[in-house]
Amino acid sequence: MERIGYYTKGFFPYLVFSVLIALAGCSPSGSGENSGNAYNTGIGRLDLVTLYSTVTSITVHVAYEPDAEPFTGTFRDGGQYWSVLETNMKAIFLGRIIEPDLSVPKDITGMEQILTQAQASWTTEQVFDLAQGTWDTPQTSTSTEFYVLFLNGYFNDKGVVNKQVTGISINKTPVIAIFKDVIRKSGYSSFDDTVIEQTTLVHEFGHAAGLVNNGLPMVSDHEDTEHINHCTNEDCVMYWENDGTSLNFFIHKIINSPSDVIFGPECLNDAHSFMP
Image (tube, rainbow, N blue to C red; front, side):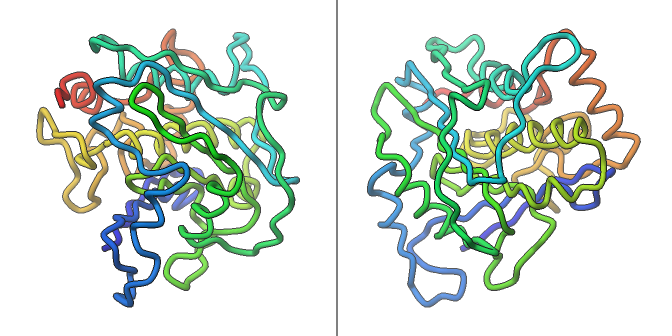
């Protein structure tokens, strides 16, 4: 069973597509290939019960192909780009009995360059296999590892290459991929692209962490029934679409707010209230 959600921000139509693959032991074609068993080995599945009950440390690992290097640097106020992801990860666990220690790389020296893969497009299975071949640190009862790949090329959605997909999160795994070709071709300034990249990371982390109705029970009914696993709150990063004015507001909210938290209160309530 496959579910595809769309998260768009108006400056670039269909900016962020969040792809969630439910690993039920069958492929979208029904052929039975790519069994879910493959995701139980190596870096393994992501267990939300463990993540929200016993995990005391979370590490984000980042690897990139040549020419797909993540944006790193600082905003005008001195805050680092990657602090946006870190701040929003902290917000998810704020106030819980265990607030895990976070390790998020802030500059390129804390990230790993991998060999050029020379692929024009990527299926979810290929993304997961690359992550599995890049890292060998498994999940434990007290530590969770997230793996983020920055790739050249585009997303291959069931045999169709989609050149508008910015990032994917493989459901029930700790693997996220960012497609730099899409971000580079957004047609706006490098600064806008930087914010787009961080917003994509936060959005995909949200899905991996169980939002919206993707593993975490909802405290209030805020799932967009037409775009499953996305929030009805237009000011939340988990909302599926905003127009151009909204994106401009969203970017300035990130820059000018004393808080970089871009999850809405409904999503935060789900995370804070989850009692495994």
